[in-house]
Image 1 (cartoon, rainbow, N blue to C red):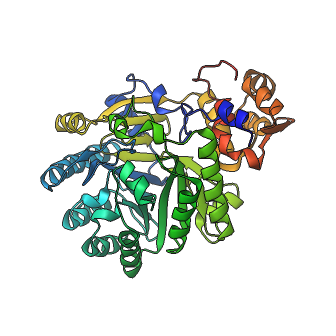
Image 2: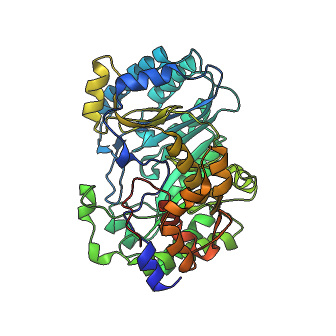
Length: 444
């Protein structure tokens, strides 16, 4: 891709569009009372997804943009779990009894900092409060540096079916620059333990754009990951926002690659994974041909949510824990971000919802267009507008950035159908942004 186009469209400030509208557009006008009303309106027989955030790590990685805190003891974790259990009780007081669960995801932070006995007790509570089935998918995120064989056995007993392992980079120079030292042997140990306990659906997270990374070090990390043959890989670009995440101020900005180097790293990693038999999914995921992500992409059913690309077709997500985002029929809700504020709110007997967004008809239309672009690199805007009762002509005309994108050769537009060229997939966020009504509307 031309350097001029990369510098023009690779804007780090653009949202990743895992949801729309995005979190910065949430308002404090949507609080606990609103969330309770929305929960009460959930249909009793419609499956939901659950997300549970664990805001603790044994070591803080400087690149991390998620709300988490350092702990070396189990006491704050167990205190936090008491609060989560109370939040689960408060939520189930508002929802229909025994809501069926399609997916449960433990995120963080590091969910496997939860002691094994407490993890099993938490799963038992969730199973009492919601209706799980044999087809319910249970997923957990793992930091390999503090993972034990006992925890692997616990996850197997709990019924976990998928694990996402934070790898980021196997290059020791890069690891030291971001305060995340972990060996290939540690990662291989986790993979072996998981597979021994029946957890064979494994994802690796890799990053590009980190300090001191080169195309060769990125390719080497991808090749090392391939020796363990995960069935999925997520290859994310590091987002450097030190004004927002203070821990990122520890990173040497002079060692960060520029837009051109980042694009070269991303393309080289993609080529490496595709050459090894993986299918590219959306912007930044890769999956083996028999993985469910591949199947959902092939059938046009791939979804995008706050966790990234997903085969989960649920329209409702209930989030637990600080910063957790929920997606209900009426709109989005987010809990208090700080663990202390979250715990204080729950202790008063009220939900910890701090902000959210009530979806309008136009929001739902724009969200579907953005989701299809992010998932399929194309969208039949005319058909989507018709399905939502909107006239596509003024809607397309108002997306003033589209014409500039087309003139620059990023995409083609024919009778309301937008198709992004494969070689420009890395700037898909700029295309999605053309339909974001909340962004500054200044043309490129």
